[in-house]
Length: 462
Image (cartoon, rainbow, N blue to C red; front, top):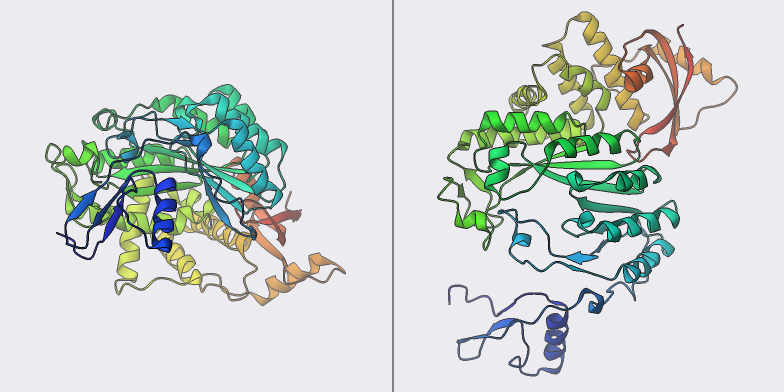
């Protein structure tokens, strides 16, 4: 009655329900024998059919069996349903049934994706590694059957990884897998309040162990608006996770999902959220509305300058001039809002110019030179830039001097040679600033899993 435009709802798992529903529509037959639905009858009354029992995972159909064109596709796949944890903001904690598809069936399914060279397979398992034998067999299989093209995405609990798991991960081709790791907060009062179980020290150690091999893209999550997390506590959580050096730090905002324990406890923590999907937090007893707006601004520049992986070395160097990493992004977000107060977004060159101008307010002349060279190196790692940002005034003599290092080889559009006043590779690998001309060759046809060009030092000052 409240939503007259809605004629029906599917409830629970939909594989059998949707199949029967489509058949009923085709045959124009009655809906009264289909379980797992609610629907509006012709007289306006509402029928509520019984929920279905849960299917064993092995009986779920492999929906990609008849797919013909796999090229460039992103495939979503699940080898388990449910979650062993009870995070109060998540609907997966409501259903206590944790089911696994037979591992041998999973491997057969994955072989189809590998044989057809799918671009990316995203596992939607809530905690992929909660069954170690299951996850290890899958990781070993994709390693042993790697086609050099297909990559896989998994959501894991990093603190339950063991040495054997990390050993397998370290043996994988760079870019073969991506990991999403939900940290959410490092405030222990917050973790306890949301019924989350996490060993932060072990998580930190395992993330460090995975990162050492530089072969896996790691995405760490942080949620704003949780109980007991005020702006100072959130700042600490941000810095704790940032110090783990993830490839991507996802700053999300709490959603009060219907049916979740967090929604039932919202008054206890003074949580107020939007009343329309996705029910995102507006403020809490601990975090004001202005704080939320500030974090939204931080999220914007974090995505632009950190998660894009386009400013890796320059941002790393710049962050050393601030009390903490959050402070840098907080001040950068204020600079961004002043420059783009009309709501417009910067061009690619505009992003470089904004960061360069921002750095100029905090760095001395020498540090600004180093920062500028690292920023220029970051730029050329991604693109053979023809139209330079204004902060890198075009120097014709330097450009001609760089070209001489190609010798008799005529550079293509996919190649570039640039002279830097420092050795950016030394800073990247060892954190040392070594001044002196360094000539670097960029090959844009061969890129790493972060989409950076392959580089080679042609000459450096001794």
